[in-house]
Image 1 (cartoon, rainbow, N blue to C red):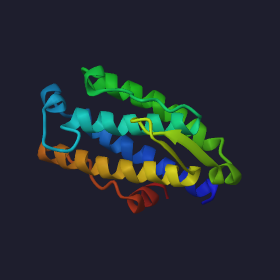
Image 2: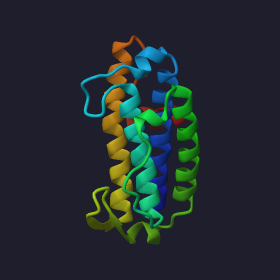
Image 3: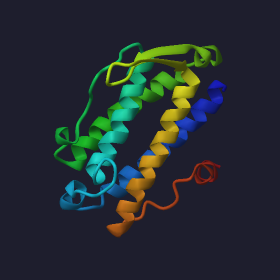
Length: 164
């Protein structure tokens, strides 16, 4: 995978996250905090999990393997989550912009949150992160739609058409 391809995917990722977050800003505090039967709970839990994934993978790529990270309880309001996400997205995009084709091939050694050692080429992990976000943005989109606030299409092709 080439740097320009990864950069495009991460620009899409940021665009899709923004659509989800901008729509989430329209729900009530009660809806944001409401429990749900999804794998990470309701809006807050699913969004925090998605943010956690973006953070933990980035720091792993930088050589740190934390055992834990942000938890839903750390974000009592949507605005607190959004501010943390803005900071992480800025740092993540700086990381992506500094990549080269060669660094994307580098093997990253890291530990899972349970301490199990793993290693993969950086580009595999970076592709995983965008794909992982797609899954959880889709879950959030369903919740938002159920609350009467659809984020609209968040497909990659929609992004490409939107930027043309």
